[in-house]
Image 1: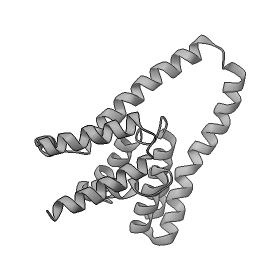
Image 2: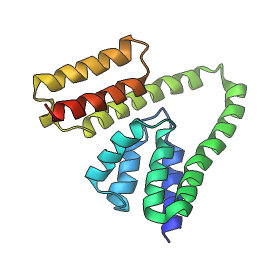
Image 3: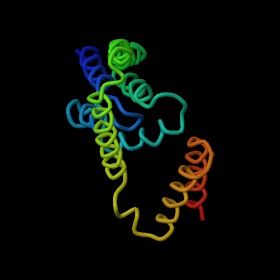
Length: 175
């Protein structure tokens, strides 16, 4: 039963993980935390931090972590197969349609609206992953501003920013 639930859940996550790395997180949280209770909210947030420092697609890393916790290595295989199956089929079909209809104004309009919705979802996820109490100090606001600036205005790899943030956080804990 757990393997079937893993398959269905991660197939759904893979199917709706359009628009970039973080657009799928609200659905992932609903499936993993609220629907199946495979992870608690604190565990989900811990894994969020953990998967961000590892290379690769975030949905694959979630499928791997949850799949292993719930079903061992076979759970990893099932969750990742399901996670990747929907996007592969979707991309194949979309490629055929896009090559045929890419110059229509309706398709261009659809992409513009989809970009706005995905932007809104990413902002929502950002607010869900942190409590406002964490932002009440000047140091926290300075860290947020510095990370945002480094990400937006430099060519520093995001992984380096995240690793540096982890080291800074560990250092500040001991000071």
